[in-house]
Image 1 (cartoon, rainbow, N blue to C red):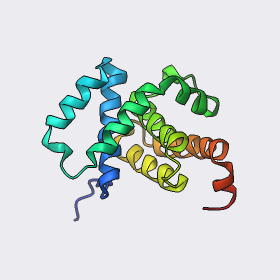
Image 2: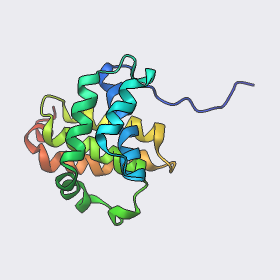
Image 3: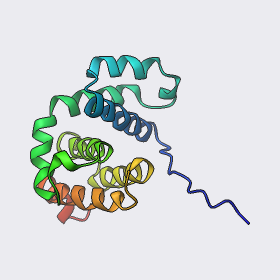
Image 4: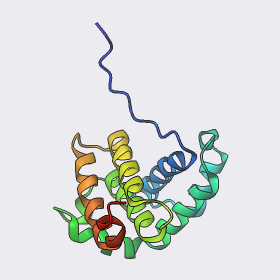
Length: 153
C-alpha cells in the first residue's frame, strides 16, 4: 500500500520561497512580537533562505509590518470572525496576500491568491483554511484591483 502522507505544496519560484519565509517570519512577529529587524537577521543567517529572492523577502516583510494597520482595513470586512480569533498563520498569510494585492501591482492578482492558498494548504491550522484564505483574498482583490479582476486577467 502506498504512503498516504499528504505532501505539502512547495513553492518552486524564488518569489514563492520568499513568500513562504515571509509568512513564517510574520507568524513569529504576530505570535512572539519579535521585532522585524531581528527576524530579517535570523532568516538571513538561516541556510533556509537558500534559493529564495532575499530582496523580495525583505520588501514583503518590511512592507507588511509597516502597513499592517492598513492591511487589516482591507481584509477585516471580509472575515467571518473577529481578526483576533484568526489563527496566527492564517492572519500572516492574509497579511502578505493583502500586501501584495495592494502594494505590488506587478504581481497578477491570481498569482497572489494562488500562492496564498498554497501557503494555507502548507501551514494552515485547520483543514479548510485554504478555502477561507481563498474567499477572503478573492474579495480583497475585487475591491483593490477591480479593473484587473473584471477584465479576467
